[in-house]
Image (cartoon, rainbow, N blue to C red; front, side):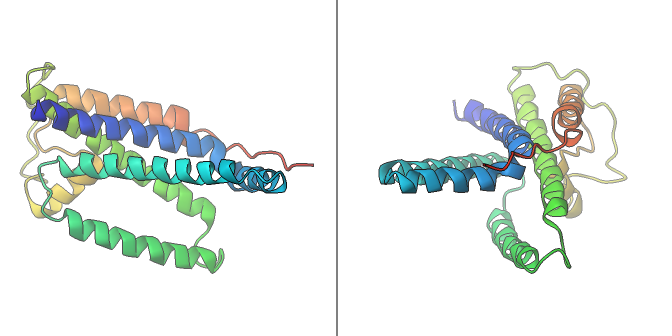
Length: 206
């Protein structure tokens, strides 16, 4: 049962990542304005319980997604540097935020969100490959070629550098067919429904 759970969690995390990036691409541009408008309305009508519920749901949703993401990553084969990577990610997040609040002289919000979209989609694809590899190992899915090729002499995903790239991109030196077919479908869907879609900008309230 634990093996099935560990195979399913990366797939759930990949689905949540895709849904989050897809939703933010369509609603992120006007999200701040919509939240401020809704909070002003709730405050003017003294709906303090509603405001507290909104804040709790928002924090709980993001916290739950973070837990699923981290667990999905932790079920991978290379987890010894998870805590160090998380700490470095937190530091980099503060650095990026500091650059962003200083204005577009250093980095623009548009560029920041575009880069984070791509990074999240890369991570989602890696989690998808990891989950499908586990399902093939459990004989729940056919391999459809095992391996498709052997690129270990070029970049072995068992090495330190190759393992880092594999963790963020889904690279396998000896990939199986079903995982890479799914990865190709992942990027086709990402281009069709996320990367090629212009963000929707909500109309300003009257």
